[in-house]
Length: 143
Image (cartoon, rainbow, N blue to C red; front, side, top):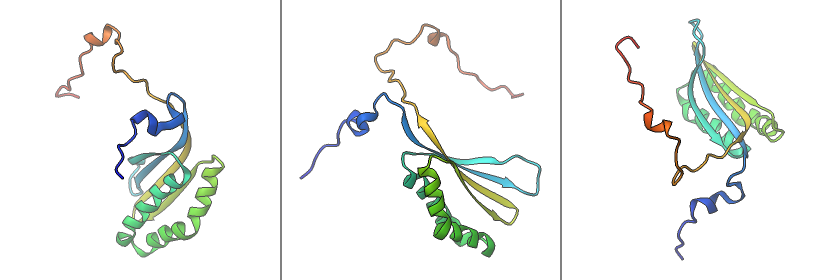
């Protein structure tokens, strides 16, 4: 039997208009041979602890064949043993960090418990008059 997908509001269930618990996940890289700060490589919003640690697990499994033996060992150690500690920390609403070092590059995944705030639907709403005056910034040659 084929069924139509529920309307967007129905998929959200009781979360419409209410803050929703979840996890903010980030992946940072840092070149250890320079004085540069870590760079944000990717971010992900997860709505459950399993979804959050799965994001890290998929990334580690994906890159592990390209890692040197030490970094690969770090990755698989977390996948086999560390992941359970990460999950427990997340379920206690504690942040968690996973780090591996490949040659001179450090890769760090962070997972933090957060409250996602709902966005207001703008369709049909009258925006303030000042929005008509807004002009997007155009970069100059000196920017």
